[in-house]
Image (cartoon, rainbow over all chains, first blue to last red; front, side, top):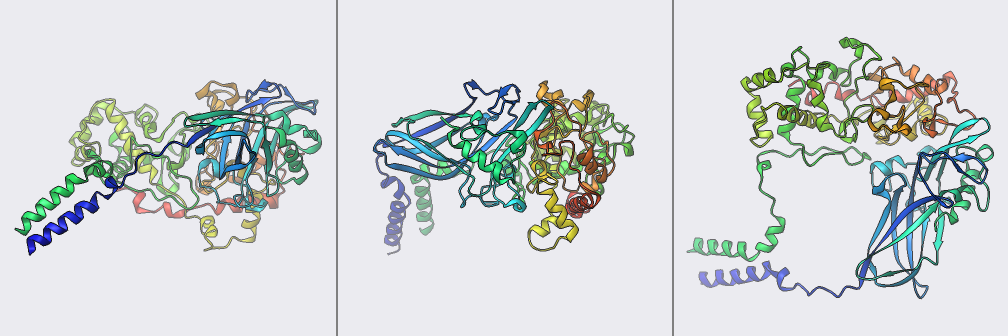
Length: 243
Length: 354
C-alpha cells in the first residue's frame, strides 16, 4: 500500500512540476514590432549646438541653449485608417545634451502602416503631481515646488542671450496644469513590421520664440516660471516645435 | 524503504526540472561567504549609485569603517577621520588641520555619498570607489606603501578581513592594496545616510516648522530665493555642475570643472553640494571662502559675479545681480537651512570608531 501511495505521489508531482514545459505553446506568429523615436534639435535650419551663442531668435537676440530637458507623454499612434491605436500612458524624459535620453522605444506595436502620431510636451493632470513619477535623479530635478503648484517642470529651456546692454541668462520653464503642449504630426508616416522601425523627430528650438507670438526676453521676461502670461505664450508657440 | 523512495523522488524532481532550475539558481562564487548589505533608501531619494564591482557587504563595510579610523595607512598619524570628524558632520575646517584656506579644496562632508555620481568639487573622480587612492599621497597620509603593507600584514585582524572581503585575493601588493582600501572605505562611507532632520520629520508630518522656518522654506522653494533649482528635492542637490557667480577671474582650482574637461563652457563650474547638515559643515563653497551661512546667503543676495559661464538660473528678472532680499528674508532663509541639520549621524555608533 505504501509503495503504491509513493508511486502515485511520485507521478503526480513529476507531472505537475513540469507543467510549464508540457503546456508551452509554440511561438506565436509575430504581429508586433518596435518603434524607436529618435530626437534631434535644430535652430531653424541649423543643427543645434548647445552652449554656443549666436542663434538669432524672432525678437532679434543672439542666443544659446545650455539646457533643454522636457517630458513627452500621452503618445498615440494613428494608423492608416485614421484610427488611433497603441495609446501609451507614460511619461518620457528627454535631454538634448544627454545621449542616454535622446530616444524613446515603444515595444510590441501592432504591425501595419501608420500615418502619424500625437503626443504631449509635458504631463497631463493625472501625472503632474509631486512624487507621481519614480524618484530618479532626473525626475527629482524636474520637480516643480509645491509652493508653486507642485508637479514637475514640463520643460527647462535655458541659455544666454545678447542685447544692447550685454549678455544675460534666460530660463524658459514650462509647467502647471493646462500648460502642456499638444503635438500632432498627422503626416509622419511609418511602417511597423517584425523589426524595429526608427523615425526621427526634430525640435526646432526657434519655434518656442515665435508663431503665433514673438517671445521677447526683455518684454516677456527672462524667467517664465510662475508667470502665467509667459508660460501661455510658450505653450502656444510650442505647438509646432516638432517636425 | 521509504527513504529509498524519498531519495529517488528527490533525484527525479531535481533532474526533471533542471531547465527551470538553471535560470533561477544563484551563481556560485566567492561572494557566498559574504553578507550582502541593503542600503535603505529614504523616502523620495532616487536609487543610490551602487556599482556592481564593489557591492555593499557587512564585512566590507566593517573593514572600511576600521580603516577609516585607523592611522595604520599613514606615516604621519593621520586617518580618514582626521579630516572627516563624525561629530562635525564628517568634515573639518582646512585651518583646523593646518591647511591654508583657499589653497586647498574645502574638505567635503561625507553624507549621502551613495547618491553622489561625482566626487571632488570639480567631479574629477567618476566614482566613490577610487577616491581614497589619492589619500596615500604626500598631502594626506604621506604613506610608505612598503611599510603600510608590513603593518597591515602584521596586524591581528586585517589579513583575515581583507582576505574575506576580497575573496582570498592577495591585496598586499603595491597598487592593489590602495584600490582595495579605497573600495572598503567607499562601502563604509556609502552607509552614512542623513535623512532625519527636522525638515524630514516635517515632511512626514511628525513635526511643524516655525513661522520663520516656514517662510524660509517658501523663499527657498519659489523664485524669490530660487534655491530649489540646484538644491531641490530630498537630496538638496541636483548632482550637477554650475557656475554660481563666485568669481570674475578663474585661476587654478577656481577654474572648476574646466580643469577636468578642458571645455570653456565648464569654466568656474562646481558640483552642487547638498545643503543637508549645512549648519555643521562650515566653511562653504569649493574653497571654503565663507565662514558662515550668512555670508553664503549674502553672496547670492548681492555678491554674484557675472561671467560668460554663469548659470542662467542665476539671472533673475529685474535683479540679475542677486536676490536682493532684506534682512528679515535672509534670516528666514537661514532658519529654513538650519532645519536640515541631522544630529543623529553625529553620534550614531554605526558610523563611529569601532
